[in-house]
Length: 462
Image (cartoon, rainbow, N blue to C red):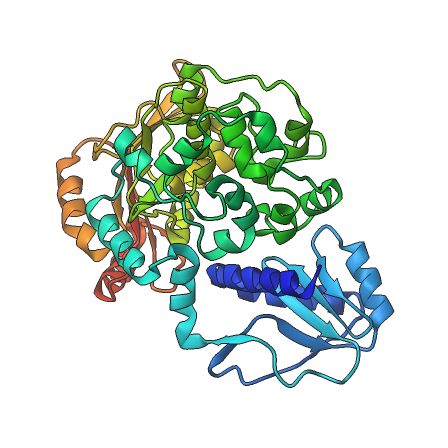
């Protein structure tokens, strides 16, 4: 990897790691333990950590050969980002570690100021105009929480597909083919530009580095931010405009040696999806639009352009007006899932729950049916099925922000029937189940989180 690409990749991995702060310490101690357990002592190199957070943790060891043997032994968990005779940079559990083999240590390495962490996180997620987009998202999360909207054709045409932030770093070569090097940024302009264009003319501009592509597939770096992966071809996004919605679409992170984009690239005949299957695909409201810019689901938006170019009629997308991913909320949903043993169910019908539920149910191999989600409906519930007659119904009352507390109390008062369970995070962000036998302790913990404006409560009515 060239120095410029390497620096980009390190930058992305570091900023991404800021989102995993809750597991970062565990990663650090696990890293040290593995080496120590294999008779390799690492000397920690300390810098001024009072104000700075460094792009990677640094260690010194003179056991170079032994270290490389260990990395090879644990290649399923360690990945070498780069190495030479003086040092090695390793990715382990979302965190970067550098080990020097000579005592000549650089005086300076890249870092950010600790008080800039929040701004880096916001910029990573919400660029461009990251501050205004952050506040738009925050306000939307209060007024449009769990609400789903329908994207009209006019709104679809006016979406801005500008690449910014991480997308700009990794996807520019893919987007340049679609936007004519940034000339056409709105969907209506992209659509007009490709009208009447011969597919062979488009294919003549596509390249595919097979070696680099397959190397990236075996990497520990997630594909969405893997610079080698996105550098290997400019086919990933244009494929949607060429083929529209096709039956065999590959999830980025679930590609394999047998099923991948290279196989799709080599295919001459692509099987198209039917109208009903496309309609079903668009039921999932994982598209987020903030300030007229789409976040996620970009492939589906581009596939719709391809579908229209092939003579299809526009089908309304479902979308949200704010990000709803919340790691702390996922802890509570995870606790709920284990408490009620939902892994024993095969299917779930979702009624206006957010993507935190989708993720955890999907991780447990439960098939999610989005068809029952209604536009602008407020009720939050789901039905788990283990057969036609064997099912469980759950209703949810959530308190994510202090402003949600009054409405949650009213909902709880109105919900007379049904067995109620309460899951909450205490002020140390530990998951808890409210138990009557320790009523006062639980009540005080919840009260404390409310006082410090950090309530995170999930009430489940069975």
